[in-house]
Amino acid sequence: MPERSQYDVVITGGGLAGLTLARQLRQTLPDLSLLVIEKHPFPVREAAFKVGESSVEIGAHYFGHVLGLRPYLEQAHLPKNGIRYFFTRHGNRDLGQRAELGPRVPAEVPSWQLDRGRLENSLAEMNRLDGIEVADASRVISLEMNAVSGHRVTFERAGQQSTVRGRWLVDASGRGGLLKRHLGLARAVDHNSNAAWFRVPYQIRIDDWVSGADWAAFVPSRTRWLSTNHLMGRGYWVWLIPLGSGSTSVGIVADDVLHPLATYNRYERAIEWLERYEPQVADVVTASNEPADDFLVLRHYAHGCQRVYSSERWCLTGEAGAFTDPLYSPGSDFIGMSNDFIVDLIRRELRGEPIDAVAEQYNRTYLLLFSAFLRIYSGQYRMMGNAQVMSAKILWDNACYWAIPALIFFRRKFTDPVFLKAIDPLMQRFFFLHHRMQTMVRKWDEAVEPPAGDARNDILSVDLLREWHRSLPQPIPDDAELVQRLTANLERLEVLASALTCLARETEPGSPVVAECLDQLRRSILVPDSLAAVSLAGLG
Image 1 (spheres, one colour):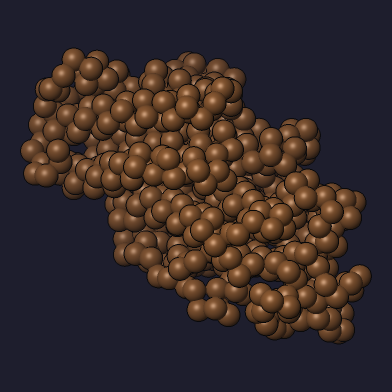
Image 2 (cartoon, helix red, strand yellow):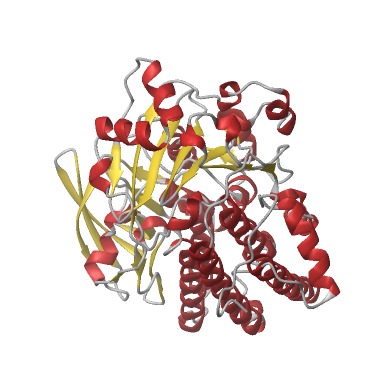
């Protein structure tokens, strides 16, 4: 039961978002009194606990660098060899005959495959050792919001009720969204996809699925299995993610119109669905004769929120606020960005600073980023089986991510309101360009048939992307230099956009700079040997 009745910060939810927030608060503001209320009892089950195992650059940097967890992650979890994509061909019975887009060698900027049960157990123990109270096996019964006397939280543990007050209340309760429901903050989004997943108690090593010199030469380290592997088809993708516990996570994510959830919402139906669309995966899973550790379904997983931070000393973080899509594994990214905003708001308020304007700016920035990320996925699932268009989209999406938001996060500038205000015109220009290109790739897919081929490529073979990715952790001396870097990156993104548009139209570029970029794209994107020219109105 709680040791006191009044806390500086009460966090409802002791999953990944809540536990990492508590750790960051303890490191940043060590004198705070902190209480985390979690419904599950610790330790939780490893492997078959929660989905969301794959991390990418922002989230990995948050865990490894900001929270100081890199030694632990390297010891207890698996290194991730990027995201890898295989596109539909010949009934998907031979991975070696499918077009592949993925890294040839491990990335210089590290990320990890996370066993969520193992990670959350470890974080809970670390937090307790740091003097953070973690009330597990506890159910929140009621909330009473009062910014003057403190927010009241009543919860039950082992049949006993306790009521505590928090000067700050942070909801990290997941998509159940205690505060979102209490305050009526839910906002619908126009992205309608579903997911089902299960874990099997063994490693699936796709490197062993194919023999041949060409297959082996593309990834000589035989570490394809350490990637977050995406098997792509029209309207869907299937993930294969290895876990440090020795299990493998297998998931189906699909557009609700093209692949209704009812066709894979039970384990037996999911196997039948895999036999139809991804038979090689189905064969591997069924050949083991070992039962799955679990099977879970999530309907219409994308959701929005009207507000996530308030000067009335309440906040939402993680999936308690908003969630886009698992394709590029952005869940940990949004946890890292959100927790940064929350820690900075609490720090400022405890120093006696007025936080009304800062809370508004952080809320606007976070929700604009959410909206921009959501555009990556909304209405885009149809193109996932198109190797040509989807590989161009993947290249563009990664370029945008590394060039702008990841660079800002690595420099720790999202919590600098003066800096955010200074780059607001640049960010508006970036969001407009990003939106235009998402419209472009969708029209491109509608205009061409998916090409067939077995090409293999790596977007990091594009000099621009390799430069942006490699430079993320490198120091930048001051804000002026960072603004110059962001401005130059945006200008180069505009050149890249022009070259991709030329590629979509099969037209000649209008400038030598675009021509040079286009030549490299032709060598680096999964483009078949010959393309029929297409004419797309409104692509410019």
